[in-house]
Image 1 (cartoon, rainbow, N blue to C red):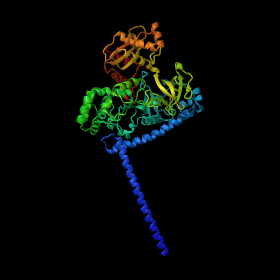
Image 2 (cartoon, rainbow, N blue to C red; image 1 turned 90 degrees about the horizontal axis):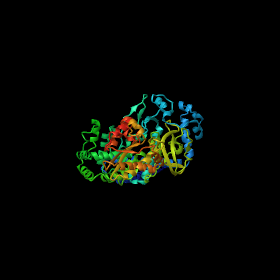
Image 3 (tube, rainbow, N blue to C red; image 1 turned 90 degrees about the vertical axis):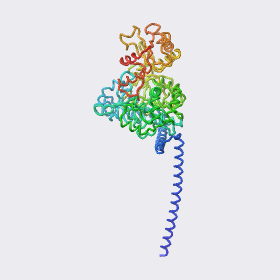
Image 4 (cartoon, helix red, strand yellow; image 1 turned 135 degrees about the vertical axis):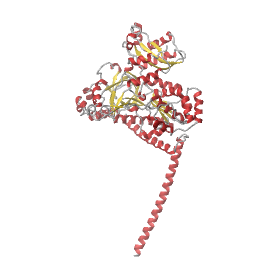
Length: 620
């Protein structure tokens, strides 16, 4: 009995000791937890740049940002590993896609089950263009299964239509994931170079939802993944409330984006798919700033804005009168628009938008005028076909993109063989630095050995993987006598010519081959008709207009030879009214059924109705 009592007392003592230890541990963990919460709150407050936002709104953005940061670091490490064994990664990427679709009608036709390596693939499957797939895609839209790919596409994506007409391409979930991973890798690069972008400042995202349609079988038809809106849990990161992203009309949506962006003095970033969207947003701001600051002063949404009552009610709930901010903005706008971005948003860190290719002119306008002093990061090289490359060097002026070896299986046609229908191609591990190639891709959505029409220059290698610079699109090349003037060559010549026009600043331009004019070409010799929107001058002399032709001759020996022989006539330059190219953009979008968020300006017009439209805008 006495032993039992002693055992019970001993057990009681141990329990008391354990309880005390648990209390001490709980106390210590409680202190540590409280300390971590204090540190977390301090970190959030430090990163908030003095914003007067609810703490839980900041906390939500903080947690999202940290999660994206960790995920992007993992994706970047995976990319680095892939670039160290490029041949094997490309081999696996190709065979996975071939194996996945080997039992489709298309796979059986091209004997996918016999393909064991890239050379067999190139032997059994020809190089292709869009017409090769058109009937297959129409059948997929009608609901036929197992035709081109083994899964039902999530979207039938419309291309931007720079070739003159918009094409429809299937997009799968894999394509969507590739885009997300690409932006994740870019987010990692952005944080490394611009760590201040990790602050809890809101971003003004200029995004315009599309009016989606559906195929006969119910597959959504619309823009590609690059143009799709981000997931709803990220709305806290944007200055525009969620209701603003429901507005499909471009002028109304842009007005709302600008209204809420201007309210946010601590804005940290401007984001859009392309630099053209940001540029046109500032041009719109320049014409509407008085109405916008009046809305901020009164704390309401402009009653003239054509939006639904439901959306207006949701937006109005986010607005309060702010006469102090309105007065501050009025003073800045009254001082002019050079450098306006940094003046109205003193904490602005970055403009995130693609400014290569046809968007180079708009990027230049932003850097030299509206966004003076604010860096621009062009994050990805992408197309409707999918993600092609990522820019891991945000701080560099040159827009170089590392090809993503798991996104596309890539082949390269040396530029001097581009006119051949079935030229010999090279693989990623066979290309040479400083050489030009036409890019050929096999993607995850049923395009095999597809000639997308892009010409790229290999500027170097990251580990074993090519780093490329986009040079031009073949369908945007001027060619009336075999002279083949690329978009880049013409643009550089035009910039030089404009410098010879005293006081002139080039705002926008496009070209037309005289054959599109038909019997009204104004002469028998084929030539280029050039339409420019400029500020600073109202007219040009014939000698000044001829400067462009001289610059082209200096930049192209073939063009110069044709001019001297008289087989090509001189360039004819036309000045159009202010705002004409924005109107042309609206006209092309309405005509082709593309979206504002994916539109790229057509530097060479291929459709007569587009030419007729811009001709009506000529003032000189």
